[in-house]
Length: 256
Image 1 (tube, rainbow, N blue to C red):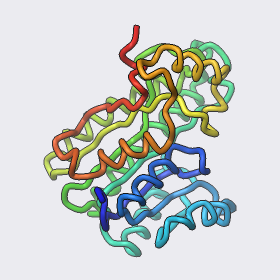
Image 2 (tube, helix red, strand yellow; image 1 turned 120 degrees about the vertical axis):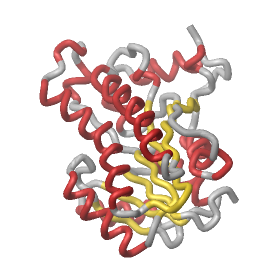
Image 3 (cartoon, helix red, strand yellow; image 1 turned 60 degrees about the vertical axis):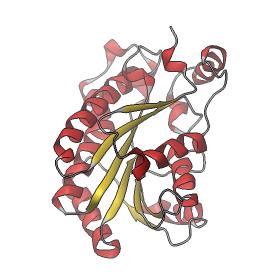
Image 4 (cartoon, helix red, strand yellow; image 1 turned 90 degrees about the vertical axis):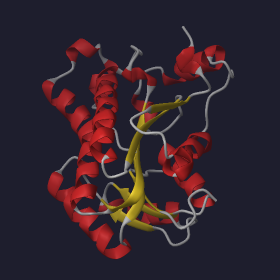
């Protein structure tokens, strides 16, 4: 098992169809002990039900992962109750619906700031707090989730593409900063998956169809397939990989 007895913090689990859940499934099957953050204390019973199959896992409410003091408070509690962790998965992103349904040029200042704060800055903040609180074990691995719309114009992705581009650049700078301490930082770019977040993208089903037609493997990826790549990145099997965007999209990104 690639993650036997490793403690992995997964930020942003929502439901069984989320990429975060697929990562949790794979990590757990590979021996990891799981810790989760989720949004909304009123969702506690739902998240408890969602994660009960991951025996011994713990959950913590974190309503806004882009707020310094909130993250510090929750991370402090996580360390006090669990000790240091071996891996962190950042599965948090959000943009206002109206900013995804209109042309990018009409993005509001508030919408631009919101998308970048929640989708990109929150990862920088998580990395910084984990470092400052001495929360990361030696050779820890940090993984965040990105998407092909960071480098190509995809209709309806709009400001989220800009936020993911900022996230990917942040991965490179964080990799350099934390590499001095032997900590790795990578981004995982999956193909499109019908998650709750994806519902906000206009004509999302047409994207799935295009991927099936054009990807070399002629199919869409599943959450567990993406989860298996995340497990690899969290494990020592990938100990020479840092600062990279790793694609798990059945090869779609290579096509013209």
